[in-house]
Length: 184
Image (tube, rainbow, N blue to C red):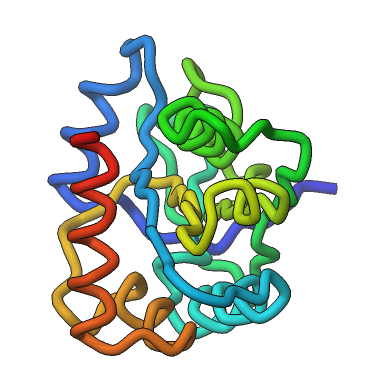
């Protein structure tokens, strides 16, 4: 029996990006480390991320290649489970190494194109890392896909931070601390 896939064609911009990345060594991930300060409840953060994914269909969108088609189609899922890892095994002494390892884990394997079988959003939090780094909590987020453009202040990142209880001042302070941390 043949499987029927309901999907959307890529936009012209996405088709150009697909063509340029098709033979590239790396895969396409939007990666970020969000620095949160103060008390952090990992279960609440994971729940907030899941609610953001449930609210924004672009975060539930994956790409499926079809036989005979040069470019994939976009498939919007009704639901997506956020891939989450508790990275309690990391040594929190070296901030740069911890951040790099958390990003590597959030992104999963590199050097391949991600299809519908993958989770469109990955996140992670290191409980032991959070303790070792004091009240700074580097939380890596990775969104897989072919983005068509950026989001404004009302995008998924802002919504996630808002659901975690950070206001605009808190977001700016977190960004400042992250820049200071990277400069140190």
